[in-house]
Length: 161
Image 1 (tube, one colour):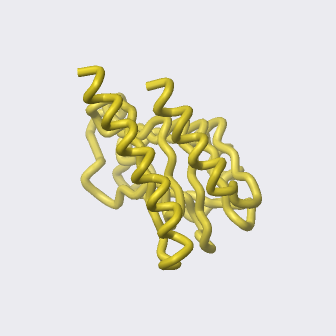
Image 2 (spheres, helix red, strand yellow; image 1 turned 60 degrees about the horizontal axis):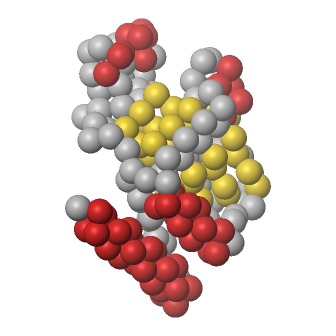
């Protein structure tokens, strides 16, 4: 089992490096998702690289009990384009049937990298969204990390899994 996991990690690293090299040649975006989380719909401690949005849930993720919501936490998101938001979710409020935020995933402690250094959620700047009690600890940094840095993050994730 250990040998199989090591082979899988090695294959993921190789695939990531090949995709990073291919990105420059074909000028297409790449989404890197190293899912090292639970079998539920928890997006935790992942790298989303070269993607427009880092989390999308426009339906189907809603639940009736707020304690069973999806999670998107402690992730790194690299958006090379001019994305206005890092997440696209159901933005209903309580008067529209979203009781106890059950229609939205839990967000928090994510790091977003983009050229502008700003992002929004549900049409609000991140600071306003956070002031409403959503997405604690998430930060947006101006500028994109180098490919070598992203590969290093992936290596560290694999070493600690």
